[in-house]
Image (tube, rainbow, N blue to C red; front, side):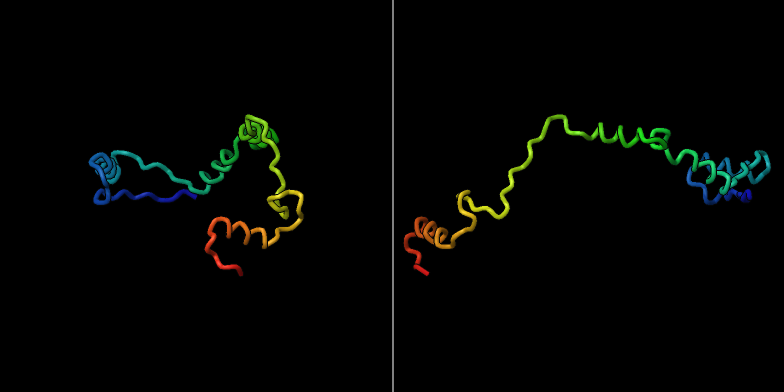
Length: 108
């Protein structure tokens, strides 16, 4: 369903737009037919690229974003103490370390 377009020269922002609106209003030029529904349906054809319509788009994206170097796996450190052989942290070890740093610290 085409929509009716009526130009208004007072709303033109440039001189060129004002001259075009005046020539359309005077009938010197024919206004373009605007069919929003047909334009919307035609735009759906371009909304998905040819690459993305098949499975090659995901493959191309994975290849483009893949790391260039081999990344080593991180070391698992959760739940382990800094001493490695001890399964738990002992609060007395930290108190002793604090006393070494600040000998005037009171024992607690």
